[in-house]
Image (cartoon, rainbow, N blue to C red):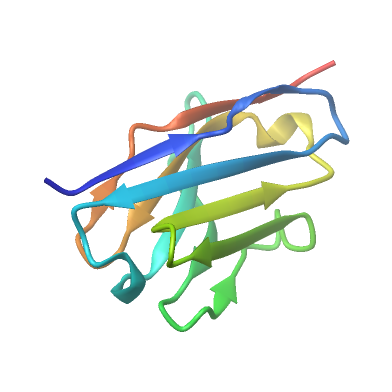
Length: 113
C-alpha cells in the first residue's frame, strides 16, 4: 500500500531553520513529481514547493529564496529545507505525490519566540 510519511516539524524561533522529510513507499517515487503544501488554521492549503521527476523546481513568491525542495530517489524521499523562518510560516506541512495524488499525514511547524 502506497504511503507518504512526513517528519521533521517542530517549534523554531523566527529566523531559524528546519528540514522536513517525506518518505515514500509502495509507489514508483522517481516517476512522480512531488509537492510540499501547508495549511494554517482558517486558511486554505497552499503549495510552497514543487519538484518534477526531472528535478525542476518551483516556489511561490512567499517562500522563494528561503525554502528549497530537493529529492533523493535512492532513498525515496523528498525534503524541504526551510531557512529564515517567519511566524507566518506556521502551519501543518504536507507532502503530495502528483502521480498518485497521495498525501501524507502532515507535520506541524510552529515559528514563535
